[in-house]
Image 1: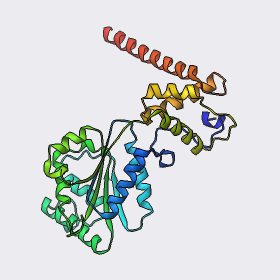
Image 2: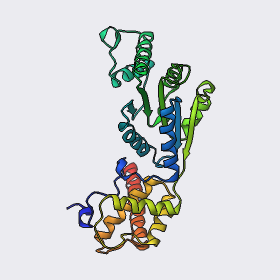
Image 3: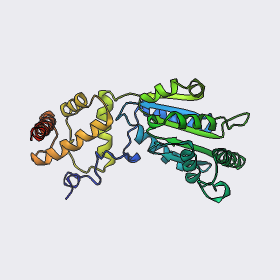
Image 4: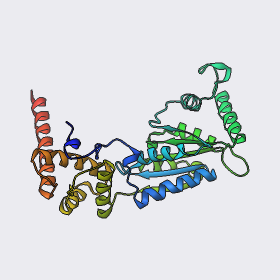
Amino acid sequence: MAYHTLLGFQKEPFSTSPDPQFFYLTKEHDMAMTSILIETRLRRGLAVVLGDIGTGKTTLSRKLVQELKDRGNIIFHIILNPDFETEEQFLTSLLRNFNVDFPQGQPGAVDILELRDAVEKFLIQKNEEKQTITLIIDEAQKLDMVTLEVLRVLLNFETNEYKLIQLVLLGQLELYSKLVAMPNFIDRVSFKYTLNPLDIQETRELIKYRINQAGYQGRMELFNDEAMSEIYNYSRGYPRHITMLCHKTLKELILQNKEVVDRQIVLDVLSKENQGWGRAESFRRISKSM
């Protein structure tokens, strides 16, 4: 039996998978989400969200996808790993994912100009049909300069009033350095935002929110205030670290046959983690000496 079932949950409360159902909207995440949706509706072109590892960018992108599904006049695609080697590879991927017919029928038998032309015709056609084309790119720090230049060119496709394609880039902080190196790209950014870690109150609210979303049916609070404070101190407010630590403390709760996660249980989990890394380091040193 899964640990979350033993504790009275209907679902696992602290999975690290980017499930929109468990996405706790802080004021910052809500502002980013609302602003992106407004920029998309107004067809302003380019929105950029930056954030350190574990601040919730990927889950934000999944929540955005969920929101866009409810809007019938938006055609969208999300790229999860934008590690393209050539412009041809990127444009080919774009045409495939938007279900656009390739020039002359087969990819690989056309040149770059024909691929660009096919994308432009698609955007013009959908504009005439009153459809908004939106491309979301997660892990956007992986974009190379060639692909960024292609995106810049795509933003040139516009009417007198708005852009024909809406781009949403979500990436780690190093993405900013790449954009700064392209002045003719960064000046097209209509909305930019940087996600920060949660504060201690938001950390508490996230923990309680995920417990409620998982359908907790117990009568007692699973985490006391001291435990949540210790979780915040260790995680520094990064949502990914919070969820991972909460997951481990609930398993430890069962192992210790207790009813509430307190500060000591959190410390016990952290101590075991440190010991585990210490054993791994010792094994690595022994292996090297053999």
